[in-house]
Image: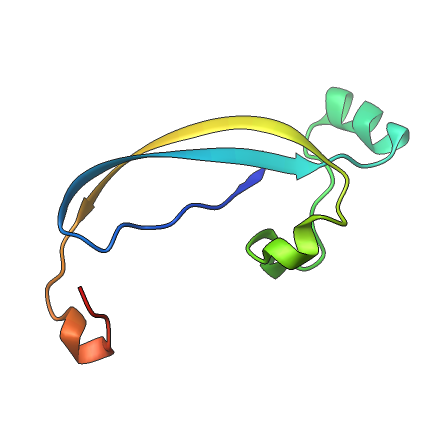
Length: 84
């Protein structure tokens, strides 16, 4: 389990994305509990995962890579102020 962030393309079509994930490191006691029980430390404010200015203060470890295949359709985007 972890957190990741990537940009969704603003062009129509199929896109292959790679999202690098990370998770909070936690204390040695939390890591030991995670190994035997599962779960793990979570962010109190998940919005910090998307804010680059807040992430540098977190103690984290790599959690793996997620490969995404996205199909983007731009129908009616103009109604919502999205420019392509």
